[in-house]
Amino acid sequence: MKAGVIGGGSWGSAFARYLGDLGLPVRLWIREEDVFGEVLASRENRRFLPGFRFPENVSFTRDPADAASFGEVVFFAVPAQFSRSVMRRAAPGISSRQTLISLTKGIEERSLKRMTEIMAETIGPYADPTPAVLSGPSFAREVALGHPTAVVLACKNRKKALRIQALLSGIQLRVYVSRDVAGVEVAGAVKNVIAIAAGISDGLEFGHNSRAALITRGIVEMKRLGVALGGCPETFAGLAGIGDLVLTCTGDLSRNKFVGMEIGRGRPVADILAGMAMVAEGVRTTRSIRRLAEKAGVEMPICEQVDRVLYRRKSPRRALVDLMSRSLKNE
Image 1: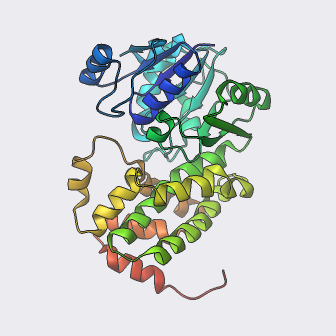
Image 2 (image 1 turned 60 degrees about the horizontal axis):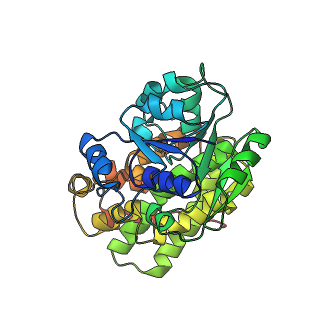
């Protein structure tokens, strides 16, 4: 089976390498002209995934439709806010015989739609109507290093899910299956916002108690919104929920936690983002989550305070103090 990977950032590159190591012919779309040229010359993405060469069965393109038409299974690893435009460009290369899988963890800010919903809008006339999402605790660099990793593949078509599970699973990557597409996607988006809060707490040197409280109450917020949007409660106790949340709130490779830590240390958000080569999805997703929560009538105090810090100039210390000063209630 051939695979197309659309998105040459750290996760797209790591995933393309993994597919190549499985023996699949892979075509990877890379947006940046300089990165593309460097990868052709060295077979290494030194900007986003330095130190790892691509196998010889991985080829490269600057046309997303070319990568899409190459693969019987097509993976989208593009930041959420750019996914719609890239999917439109990839659409002419898509047919109903292909399986489409999102690797992106975010919510589109303008429409408040999940990535598989955007797929249905942009690629729907060309494609199978049951796209899938792959999520869970999976830092790109650790996957590239070959560290054992467990993820979940959510798809409403069980036969398709089992086929992709068998294709992707191995000693390095263990894939579980689920039918809860909405829950898995909501979990992947919300965990990035909670990770910013955990990073702020660490940057303020509040310690392990504070981080544990944010993670625990963060899973409550994630579940509230996910269930309100059609997700299954059990999803949020699994890999896409608590698994990815713990990783992103505690791991040193977490970009969202890094952003939060730097905010907690007093750096302006604009300066932090300007110095980052890779996207921290949680920054833009925070506004999307706040609006979704308001629309669904769901209380999400941690996400609300992160939004106030990022976009309303609230003091990080004041935000965390306000969380602790809320009215008392049952757990």
